[in-house]
Image 1 (cartoon, rainbow, N blue to C red):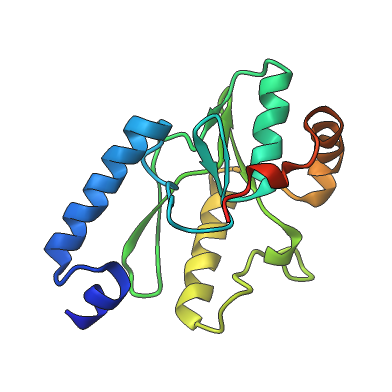
Image 2 (image 1 turned 90 degrees about the vertical axis):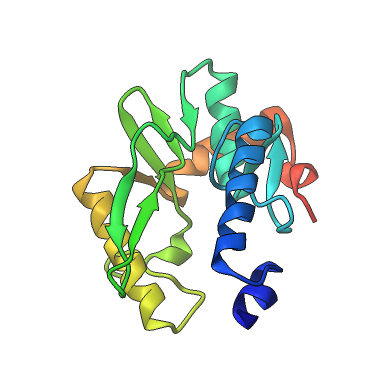
Length: 171
């Protein structure tokens, strides 16, 4: 009860579910996405009333739009399911879908020397297992992962055409 109150401002899991459902509905109505809508969290980027997790996601979005490439941002047409260390079901939605290809944008800090995905911001074994399982799912489902080397020309294109993306960052 105290954890729910401290973390989410509600006193029970039932109330938390109601808040989450309301947020999902609000996100869907205002931004066209059900998930990934963290309006209160600083460090996000906003463009076209869409909230992006990173400047790289925003850059890729701008590149696709400017080049009239048909795509979906945070497509929800397919749920990619994996399990965390407690065998709890998790649902993952890639960043983009172009035609029938799903694409994830990931910074190099999320990869070890062998090219395996890991979560660098925690020593929590549960996060490591969850990230490993998610990465295995991405490989199995053939989700294309774009890293800095892949995005470098796109980042230059966006800078040349749109300027510095910092003006779209929510502080």
